[in-house]
Length: 384
Image 1: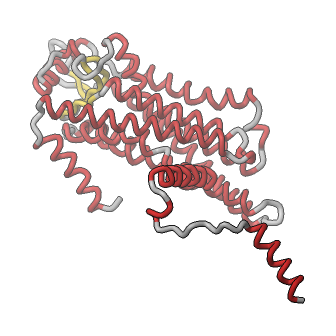
Image 2: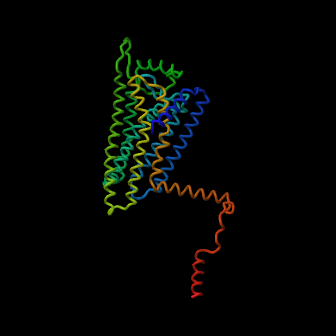
Image 3: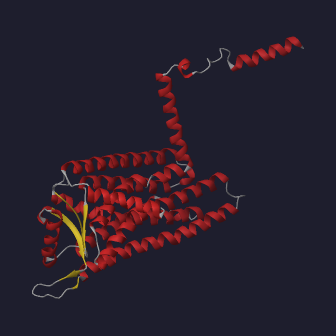
Protein backbone atom coordinates (compact mmCIF):
# COMPACT_ATOMS: atom_id res chain seq x y z
CA UNK A 1 0.00 0.00 0.00
CA UNK A 2 1.49 3.34 -1.02
CA UNK A 3 1.49 6.44 1.17
CA UNK A 4 -1.17 7.96 -1.09
CA UNK A 5 -3.57 5.02 -0.64
CA UNK A 6 -2.79 4.92 3.08
CA UNK A 7 -3.71 8.61 3.37
CA UNK A 8 -6.96 8.14 1.43
CA UNK A 9 -7.97 5.14 3.57
CA UNK A 10 -7.42 6.92 6.87
CA UNK A 11 -9.07 10.09 5.55
CA UNK A 12 -12.21 8.12 4.70
CA UNK A 13 -12.25 6.57 8.17
CA UNK A 14 -11.77 10.04 9.67
CA UNK A 15 -14.71 11.43 7.69
CA UNK A 16 -16.96 8.52 8.64
CA UNK A 17 -16.12 8.69 12.33
CA UNK A 18 -15.93 12.43 12.92
CA UNK A 19 -18.03 14.31 10.41
CA UNK A 20 -21.04 12.03 10.22
CA UNK A 21 -23.34 12.59 13.20
CA UNK A 22 -23.89 9.57 15.39
CA UNK A 23 -27.57 9.21 14.65
CA UNK A 24 -29.81 6.18 14.69
CA UNK A 25 -29.75 6.15 10.87
CA UNK A 26 -25.94 5.94 10.78
CA UNK A 27 -26.02 3.12 13.32
CA UNK A 28 -28.44 1.24 11.09
CA UNK A 29 -26.18 1.84 8.08
CA UNK A 30 -23.27 0.37 10.06
CA UNK A 31 -25.41 -2.65 10.92
CA UNK A 32 -26.32 -3.16 7.27
CA UNK A 33 -22.68 -2.89 6.15
CA UNK A 34 -21.67 -5.33 8.89
CA UNK A 35 -24.37 -7.74 7.68
CA UNK A 36 -23.17 -7.47 4.06
CA UNK A 37 -19.54 -8.14 5.07
CA UNK A 38 -20.60 -11.10 7.23
CA UNK A 39 -22.69 -12.65 4.44
CA UNK A 40 -19.80 -12.24 1.98
CA UNK A 41 -17.35 -13.70 4.53
CA UNK A 42 -19.57 -16.74 5.03
CA UNK A 43 -20.03 -17.19 1.29
CA UNK A 44 -16.34 -16.91 0.38
CA UNK A 45 -15.18 -19.22 3.20
CA UNK A 46 -17.82 -21.86 2.42
CA UNK A 47 -16.86 -21.64 -1.25
CA UNK A 48 -13.20 -22.20 -0.36
CA UNK A 49 -14.07 -25.20 1.80
CA UNK A 50 -16.09 -26.76 -1.03
CA UNK A 51 -13.36 -26.39 -3.66
CA UNK A 52 -10.67 -27.56 -1.22
CA UNK A 53 -12.62 -30.70 -0.38
CA UNK A 54 -13.75 -31.50 -3.93
CA UNK A 55 -10.99 -30.14 -6.19
CA UNK A 56 -7.74 -30.58 -4.25
CA UNK A 57 -5.09 -32.72 -5.99
CA UNK A 58 -4.20 -35.96 -4.24
CA UNK A 59 -0.66 -34.67 -3.77
CA UNK A 60 -2.01 -32.08 -1.34
CA UNK A 61 -2.52 -34.80 1.24
CA UNK A 62 -3.57 -33.79 4.74
CA UNK A 63 -2.81 -30.14 4.07
CA UNK A 64 -6.33 -29.65 2.71
CA UNK A 65 -7.73 -30.38 6.18
CA UNK A 66 -5.66 -27.52 7.58
CA UNK A 67 -7.08 -25.23 4.90
CA UNK A 68 -10.61 -26.29 5.80
CA UNK A 69 -9.85 -25.75 9.49
CA UNK A 70 -8.61 -22.23 8.76
CA UNK A 71 -11.77 -21.43 6.79
CA UNK A 72 -13.97 -22.74 9.62
CA UNK A 73 -12.13 -20.56 12.16
CA UNK A 74 -12.54 -17.46 9.96
CA UNK A 75 -16.21 -18.30 9.41
CA UNK A 76 -16.78 -18.53 13.16
CA UNK A 77 -14.90 -15.29 13.70
CA UNK A 78 -17.08 -13.46 11.15
CA UNK A 79 -20.23 -14.68 12.90
CA UNK A 80 -18.94 -13.68 16.35
CA UNK A 81 -17.97 -10.25 15.06
CA UNK A 82 -21.46 -9.77 13.63
CA UNK A 83 -23.24 -10.95 16.79
CA UNK A 84 -21.14 -8.83 19.15
CA UNK A 85 -20.51 -5.71 17.04
CA UNK A 86 -17.63 -4.82 19.39
CA UNK A 87 -16.09 -1.38 19.65
CA UNK A 88 -12.73 -0.06 20.78
CA UNK A 89 -12.85 2.95 23.10
CA UNK A 90 -9.52 4.77 23.12
CA UNK A 91 -8.37 7.91 24.89
CA UNK A 92 -4.89 8.91 26.01
CA UNK A 93 -3.18 6.04 27.79
CA UNK A 94 -6.15 3.70 28.08
CA UNK A 95 -8.15 1.54 25.66
CA UNK A 96 -11.14 -0.70 26.16
CA UNK A 97 -12.63 -3.41 23.94
CA UNK A 98 -16.20 -4.49 24.53
CA UNK A 99 -19.85 -4.40 23.60
CA UNK A 100 -23.08 -3.26 25.25
CA UNK A 101 -26.74 -4.13 25.23
CA UNK A 102 -27.50 -1.65 22.44
CA UNK A 103 -24.92 -3.18 20.07
CA UNK A 104 -25.29 -6.91 20.57
CA UNK A 105 -28.38 -9.08 20.35
CA UNK A 106 -26.89 -11.52 22.87
CA UNK A 107 -27.37 -11.37 26.65
CA UNK A 108 -24.35 -9.80 28.31
CA UNK A 109 -23.54 -12.92 30.33
CA UNK A 110 -23.07 -14.78 27.04
CA UNK A 111 -21.38 -11.85 25.29
CA UNK A 112 -18.38 -11.72 27.64
CA UNK A 113 -16.91 -15.17 26.75
CA UNK A 114 -17.37 -14.28 23.07
CA UNK A 115 -15.60 -10.95 23.66
CA UNK A 116 -12.67 -12.93 25.06
CA UNK A 117 -12.74 -15.26 22.06
CA UNK A 118 -12.96 -12.27 19.71
CA UNK A 119 -9.91 -10.77 21.39
CA UNK A 120 -8.04 -14.07 21.18
CA UNK A 121 -8.84 -14.53 17.48
CA UNK A 122 -5.62 -12.85 16.35
CA UNK A 123 -3.55 -15.24 18.44
CA UNK A 124 -5.50 -18.16 16.96
CA UNK A 125 -4.97 -16.86 13.41
CA UNK A 126 -1.23 -16.42 13.94
CA UNK A 127 -0.96 -19.94 15.37
CA UNK A 128 -2.83 -21.31 12.34
CA UNK A 129 -0.50 -19.57 9.90
CA UNK A 130 2.55 -20.78 11.81
CA UNK A 131 1.28 -24.37 11.55
CA UNK A 132 0.60 -23.88 7.84
CA UNK A 133 4.21 -22.91 7.17
CA UNK A 134 5.58 -25.81 9.23
CA UNK A 135 3.21 -28.16 7.42
CA UNK A 136 4.25 -26.82 4.01
CA UNK A 137 7.93 -27.28 4.88
CA UNK A 138 7.46 -30.92 5.92
CA UNK A 139 5.35 -31.60 2.82
CA UNK A 140 7.94 -30.13 0.45
CA UNK A 141 10.90 -31.87 2.10
CA UNK A 142 9.11 -35.23 2.10
CA UNK A 143 8.91 -35.64 5.89
CA UNK A 144 5.42 -37.09 5.66
CA UNK A 145 5.59 -38.83 9.03
CA UNK A 146 5.09 -35.41 10.70
CA UNK A 147 2.05 -34.45 8.63
CA UNK A 148 0.14 -37.69 8.10
CA UNK A 149 -2.03 -39.83 10.31
CA UNK A 150 -4.97 -38.90 12.52
CA UNK A 151 -2.80 -38.55 15.65
CA UNK A 152 -0.48 -35.98 14.07
CA UNK A 153 -3.43 -34.04 12.66
CA UNK A 154 -5.02 -33.89 16.10
CA UNK A 155 -1.75 -32.57 17.53
CA UNK A 156 -1.48 -29.87 14.85
CA UNK A 157 -5.12 -28.88 15.25
CA UNK A 158 -4.73 -28.59 19.02
CA UNK A 159 -2.08 -25.86 18.78
CA UNK A 160 -4.48 -23.03 17.74
CA UNK A 161 -6.92 -24.07 20.47
CA UNK A 162 -4.14 -23.98 23.07
CA UNK A 163 -2.92 -20.58 21.85
CA UNK A 164 -6.48 -19.25 21.83
CA UNK A 165 -7.10 -20.50 25.38
CA UNK A 166 -3.86 -18.96 26.67
CA UNK A 167 -4.65 -15.69 24.88
CA UNK A 168 -8.22 -15.54 26.26
CA UNK A 169 -7.06 -16.56 29.77
CA UNK A 170 -4.42 -13.80 29.68
CA UNK A 171 -7.03 -11.24 28.69
CA UNK A 172 -9.40 -12.38 31.43
CA UNK A 173 -6.78 -12.40 34.19
CA UNK A 174 -4.49 -9.49 33.30
CA UNK A 175 -6.66 -7.08 31.32
CA UNK A 176 -9.52 -6.74 33.78
CA UNK A 177 -9.68 -3.58 35.84
CA UNK A 178 -9.55 -3.51 39.62
CA UNK A 179 -11.70 -1.18 41.74
CA UNK A 180 -9.27 1.71 41.32
CA UNK A 181 -9.23 1.51 37.54
CA UNK A 182 -12.96 0.83 37.46
CA UNK A 183 -13.64 4.31 38.83
CA UNK A 184 -11.31 5.88 36.25
CA UNK A 185 -12.82 3.84 33.40
CA UNK A 186 -16.36 4.68 34.45
CA UNK A 187 -15.65 8.41 34.24
CA UNK A 188 -13.90 8.14 30.87
CA UNK A 189 -16.40 5.82 29.17
CA UNK A 190 -19.47 7.64 30.43
CA UNK A 191 -18.07 10.98 29.22
CA UNK A 192 -16.97 9.60 25.82
CA UNK A 193 -19.86 7.27 24.97
CA UNK A 194 -22.68 8.61 27.14
CA UNK A 195 -23.77 5.28 28.58
CA UNK A 196 -23.15 3.56 31.89
CA UNK A 197 -20.23 1.17 32.21
CA UNK A 198 -22.65 -1.25 33.88
CA UNK A 199 -24.14 -1.83 30.41
CA UNK A 200 -20.73 -2.82 28.99
CA UNK A 201 -18.84 -6.11 28.97
CA UNK A 202 -15.22 -5.36 28.25
CA UNK A 203 -11.53 -5.80 28.83
CA UNK A 204 -8.91 -3.12 28.52
CA UNK A 205 -5.55 -1.59 29.29
CA UNK A 206 -4.37 1.45 31.20
CA UNK A 207 -0.69 2.25 31.58
CA UNK A 208 -1.04 4.01 34.92
CA UNK A 209 -3.16 3.67 38.02
CA UNK A 210 -3.53 5.92 41.05
CA UNK A 211 -3.96 3.99 44.33
CA UNK A 212 -6.72 5.04 46.68
CA UNK A 213 -5.59 7.71 49.12
CA UNK A 214 -2.62 8.69 46.93
CA UNK A 215 -2.05 11.31 44.27
CA UNK A 216 1.01 9.61 42.77
CA UNK A 217 0.52 7.54 39.64
CA UNK A 218 2.24 4.19 39.33
CA UNK A 219 2.73 1.77 36.46
CA UNK A 220 -0.11 -0.70 36.14
CA UNK A 221 2.00 -3.85 36.07
CA UNK A 222 -0.96 -6.20 35.97
CA UNK A 223 -2.03 -4.83 32.58
CA UNK A 224 1.59 -4.55 31.45
CA UNK A 225 2.28 -8.22 32.23
CA UNK A 226 -0.77 -9.26 30.23
CA UNK A 227 0.34 -7.11 27.30
CA UNK A 228 3.85 -8.58 27.44
CA UNK A 229 2.51 -12.15 27.54
CA UNK A 230 0.17 -11.62 24.56
CA UNK A 231 2.93 -9.88 22.61
CA UNK A 232 5.23 -12.83 23.33
CA UNK A 233 2.67 -15.27 21.87
CA UNK A 234 2.31 -13.20 18.70
CA UNK A 235 6.09 -12.69 18.42
CA UNK A 236 6.73 -16.44 18.79
CA UNK A 237 4.20 -17.12 16.02
CA UNK A 238 5.82 -14.52 13.76
CA UNK A 239 9.30 -15.94 14.32
CA UNK A 240 7.99 -19.44 13.58
CA UNK A 241 6.32 -18.25 10.38
CA UNK A 242 9.37 -16.38 9.12
CA UNK A 243 11.77 -19.23 9.94
CA UNK A 244 9.74 -21.96 8.25
CA UNK A 245 8.70 -19.68 5.39
CA UNK A 246 12.38 -19.15 4.50
CA UNK A 247 13.14 -22.86 4.82
CA UNK A 248 10.06 -23.81 2.75
CA UNK A 249 11.03 -21.32 0.03
CA UNK A 250 14.55 -22.77 -0.15
CA UNK A 251 13.11 -26.30 -0.27
CA UNK A 252 10.79 -25.33 -3.15
CA UNK A 253 13.72 -23.86 -5.10
CA UNK A 254 15.72 -27.03 -4.53
CA UNK A 255 12.69 -29.02 -5.66
CA UNK A 256 12.56 -26.97 -8.86
CA UNK A 257 16.22 -27.68 -9.58
CA UNK A 258 15.61 -31.44 -9.43
CA UNK A 259 13.18 -31.48 -12.36
CA UNK A 260 13.99 -35.06 -13.24
CA UNK A 261 12.37 -36.31 -10.04
CA UNK A 262 9.33 -34.06 -9.78
CA UNK A 263 6.83 -33.09 -12.47
CA UNK A 264 6.39 -29.45 -13.45
CA UNK A 265 2.77 -29.66 -12.33
CA UNK A 266 3.77 -30.65 -8.80
CA UNK A 267 6.38 -27.87 -8.67
CA UNK A 268 3.83 -25.31 -9.85
CA UNK A 269 1.33 -26.44 -7.21
CA UNK A 270 3.91 -26.13 -4.43
CA UNK A 271 4.79 -22.59 -5.54
CA UNK A 272 1.13 -21.60 -5.74
CA UNK A 273 0.42 -22.93 -2.26
CA UNK A 274 3.44 -21.14 -0.84
CA UNK A 275 2.71 -17.75 -2.42
CA UNK A 276 -0.96 -18.01 -1.47
CA UNK A 277 0.01 -18.71 2.13
CA UNK A 278 2.44 -15.77 2.19
CA UNK A 279 -0.26 -13.36 0.98
CA UNK A 280 -2.79 -14.82 3.41
CA UNK A 281 -0.31 -14.14 6.21
CA UNK A 282 0.36 -10.56 5.09
CA UNK A 283 -3.39 -9.76 5.11
CA UNK A 284 -3.90 -10.13 8.92
CA UNK A 285 -0.58 -8.39 9.47
CA UNK A 286 -1.93 -5.33 7.65
CA UNK A 287 -5.53 -5.52 8.84
CA UNK A 288 -4.97 -6.58 12.45
CA UNK A 289 -1.34 -6.41 13.56
CA UNK A 290 -0.52 -2.90 12.32
CA UNK A 291 -3.66 -1.22 13.77
CA UNK A 292 -3.26 -3.14 17.03
CA UNK A 293 0.37 -2.06 17.31
CA UNK A 294 -0.70 1.53 16.64
CA UNK A 295 -3.22 1.36 19.51
CA UNK A 296 -0.74 -0.22 21.95
CA UNK A 297 2.11 2.16 21.13
CA UNK A 298 -0.11 5.25 21.24
CA UNK A 299 -1.52 4.21 24.62
CA UNK A 300 1.97 3.64 25.98
CA UNK A 301 2.89 7.13 24.83
CA UNK A 302 -0.36 8.58 26.16
CA UNK A 303 -1.51 9.88 22.77
CA UNK A 304 -4.28 7.42 21.92
CA UNK A 305 -7.16 8.70 19.76
CA UNK A 306 -10.60 7.27 19.13
CA UNK A 307 -9.86 7.28 15.41
CA UNK A 308 -7.41 4.40 15.90
CA UNK A 309 -10.10 2.31 17.57
CA UNK A 310 -12.57 3.02 14.76
CA UNK A 311 -9.97 2.00 12.18
CA UNK A 312 -9.24 -1.38 13.75
CA UNK A 313 -12.94 -2.25 14.01
CA UNK A 314 -13.26 -1.69 10.25
CA UNK A 315 -10.08 -3.57 9.30
CA UNK A 316 -10.73 -6.53 11.62
CA UNK A 317 -14.21 -6.91 10.15
CA UNK A 318 -12.70 -7.12 6.65
CA UNK A 319 -10.19 -9.83 7.55
CA UNK A 320 -12.40 -12.97 7.17
CA UNK A 321 -13.84 -11.59 3.93
CA UNK A 322 -10.47 -10.93 2.26
CA UNK A 323 -8.20 -13.65 3.61
CA UNK A 324 -9.65 -16.62 1.61
CA UNK A 325 -9.30 -14.79 -1.72
CA UNK A 326 -5.58 -15.57 -2.37
CA UNK A 327 -6.25 -19.33 -2.21
CA UNK A 328 -9.16 -19.03 -4.63
CA UNK A 329 -7.24 -16.81 -7.05
CA UNK A 330 -3.66 -18.14 -6.96
CA UNK A 331 -4.09 -21.92 -6.62
CA UNK A 332 -4.87 -23.12 -10.15
CA UNK A 333 -7.14 -26.15 -9.44
CA UNK A 334 -9.42 -23.97 -7.32
CA UNK A 335 -9.35 -21.07 -9.77
CA UNK A 336 -10.14 -23.30 -12.73
CA UNK A 337 -12.98 -25.01 -10.85
CA UNK A 338 -14.63 -21.67 -10.11
CA UNK A 339 -14.11 -20.39 -13.66
CA UNK A 340 -15.60 -23.58 -15.07
CA UNK A 341 -18.63 -23.34 -12.81
CA UNK A 342 -19.16 -19.66 -13.61
CA UNK A 343 -18.81 -20.30 -17.36
CA UNK A 344 -21.28 -23.20 -17.32
CA UNK A 345 -23.75 -21.10 -15.32
CA UNK A 346 -23.42 -18.23 -17.80
CA UNK A 347 -24.01 -20.56 -20.73
CA UNK A 348 -27.06 -22.07 -19.03
CA UNK A 349 -28.56 -18.65 -18.32
CA UNK A 350 -27.76 -17.37 -21.82
CA UNK A 351 -29.30 -20.33 -23.63
CA UNK A 352 -32.30 -20.31 -21.32
CA UNK A 353 -33.27 -16.69 -21.97
CA UNK A 354 -31.83 -15.92 -25.43
CA UNK A 355 -32.36 -18.09 -28.54
CA UNK A 356 -29.46 -18.57 -30.92
CA UNK A 357 -30.82 -16.19 -33.58
CA UNK A 358 -30.88 -13.34 -30.99
CA UNK A 359 -27.21 -13.94 -30.23
CA UNK A 360 -26.31 -13.70 -33.96
CA UNK A 361 -25.01 -17.25 -34.01
CA UNK A 362 -24.90 -19.27 -37.19
CA UNK A 363 -27.21 -22.26 -37.18
CA UNK A 364 -25.39 -25.46 -36.50
CA UNK A 365 -24.66 -27.70 -39.43
CA UNK A 366 -27.08 -30.55 -40.03
CA UNK A 367 -24.23 -32.81 -41.08
CA UNK A 368 -22.59 -34.51 -38.15
CA UNK A 369 -18.80 -34.85 -38.01
CA UNK A 370 -19.04 -38.61 -38.53
CA UNK A 371 -21.20 -38.07 -41.63
CA UNK A 372 -18.67 -35.59 -43.02
CA UNK A 373 -15.83 -38.06 -42.60
CA UNK A 374 -17.91 -40.79 -44.22
CA UNK A 375 -18.79 -38.59 -47.23
CA UNK A 376 -15.13 -37.67 -47.75
CA UNK A 377 -14.22 -41.34 -47.85
CA UNK A 378 -16.92 -41.97 -50.44
CA UNK A 379 -15.76 -38.99 -52.55
CA UNK A 380 -12.20 -40.22 -52.60
CA UNK A 381 -13.39 -43.69 -53.56
CA UNK A 382 -15.51 -42.35 -56.45
CA UNK A 383 -13.02 -39.94 -57.99
CA UNK A 384 -9.97 -42.19 -57.80
